[in-house]
Structures are given as C-alpha cells and as structure tokens.
Image (tube, rainbow, N blue to C red):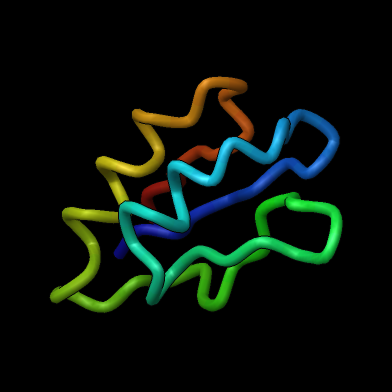
Length: 65
C-alpha cells in the first residue's frame, strides 16, 4: 500500500496535483496542497503517482508501506 506525503513548506501552490487527481489533492485558502486522503484507493493511485511526479517544488512524495 502506498501513502502520499505533502510538505506544505515546499509547496508553491501550482495546483498540478489538484488538477491531476482531485480525489486525493486539494488546495487550502493560501493555495497550498492539502491531502483529502493519504492512502489513495486502487482507482486513484496511478493518477496520484503521476501528480507526485508533476509537482514542480517536490512537495509531494510517496512512501511504500
């Protein structure tokens, strides 16, 4: 099972994650990433992985559990 981690100190608010997988990622009032879930289901896992690779500030990471 994979777990998504988000570092809001690194986030620049580009929104690529939210656009790529809105069932996993959202943005707060300041535009910073928030996780709707840190354990994406099988249906959203591939897009969540893709979103992590698109993050320009590398604020997102995946941890295998």
